[in-house]
Figure (cartoon, rainbow, N blue to C red):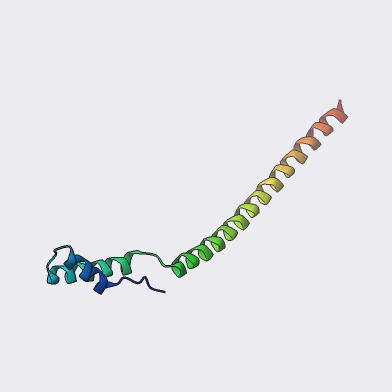
Amino acid sequence: MPISFDTLKYTKGAEEAGIPRKQAEYQAQELAKLINHNLATKDDLLNMEVGNREYMEELGKRIADRLTIKLGGMMIVCSGVIMSVLGFIMKH
């Protein structure tokens, strides 16, 4: 849903404040362009929220996978160390 900017109301208000009609109309048109091109709508924000949520879920999965691999590697190394120590103790 686009942002609504009442250019006629702005133009009338500017004229009442002493700004010439042509200048007020020009300002109203330029402000309308600025508002329509630079402000996010609720739909824009909702789409961004959905995108961020999906990204965070994917990032969480990737982190969990990496941690699982690292933990598995540490367990293998620790098992090897324990087996070596036990082997050394059994020989002596």
